[in-house]
Image 1: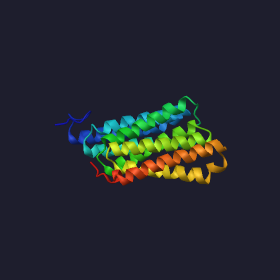
Image 2: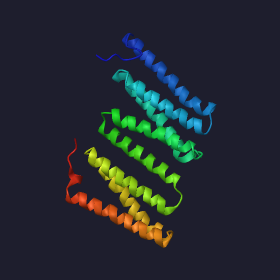
Image 3: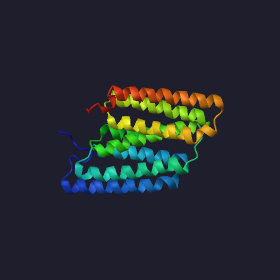
Image 4: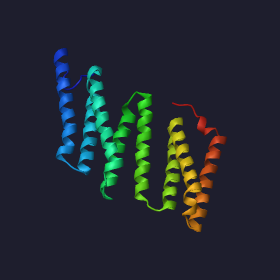
Length: 222
């Protein structure tokens, strides 16, 4: 039988009081982080706190687990919001911070039994990965190439994991890439990049067409 740390030896009322005190303390920590730190360290602090809360929740009884899950989700949401809209990170700080956020969402997707939450975590980690890769590239053609390659990689993962959800995420990213190339990048690219864009898109579309013919996209879920 699994023992719930750290209050497995306490009586039921004592466990409730203990969980309430811990939840209040962690709530105050969430508020205190931006008062004590600034810029990058606020985001890292909230990410670290969310990871600690979500891990601790797995060790508690279901009655207390929900509180820690909610607090961890709030800290994670605040960190991602700062990461996307407020932080102006240096080139070497940004990849590490994004990697930490991606790792947390990957952990959520791995351990959760909730299908909707798992799908959201998978979407979030791939969205953050594509965002970080996009920020690393400034020119239109390399950026479109990164999206195409990531979409192709995601498609392969979907086949290997027998996940139709991951495959549809890949198709959505490839569709966005095609629309971006045709309606935005086409006027910005030099002729050689324009030709390479069409060749790359053609190869990807042929591969997807081949996958449809082999009925790979209709593989049942595990």
